Image (cartoon, rainbow, N blue to C red):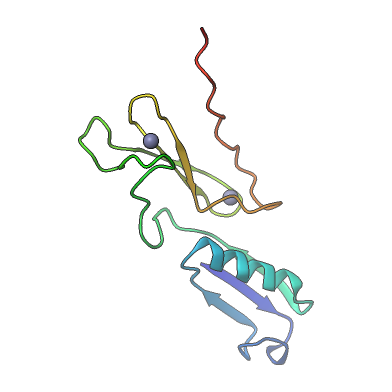
Length: 124
Ligand SMILES: [Zn+2]
Ligand SMILES: [Zn+2]
């Protein structure tokens, strides 16, 4: 959900000083944020995501493992608090994989959450 405020209604594309819009995808949120930033009449904007995946939930890790397998391979979901509202961190639990998927993706120069640690090769 993004909230954008303009100095005057006539300067806003919607003819009002406040617009609240739900961004359905990270790409859409990014587009709205970019547009709000570029508009000199925008006085303030804020956005947050809800602790709920918008759109279809990812079903496979980056290596193609199904997230919804048996309980042993069920992906782990974590929540990262962030400036932008937060990110879901989904960790693949297939043996030897541990792939991490972040949704929505980091927004450059905007996100202040600590990115998860990179996968480190096993010592040995
Ligand atoms: Zn995997
Ligand atoms: Zn963020």
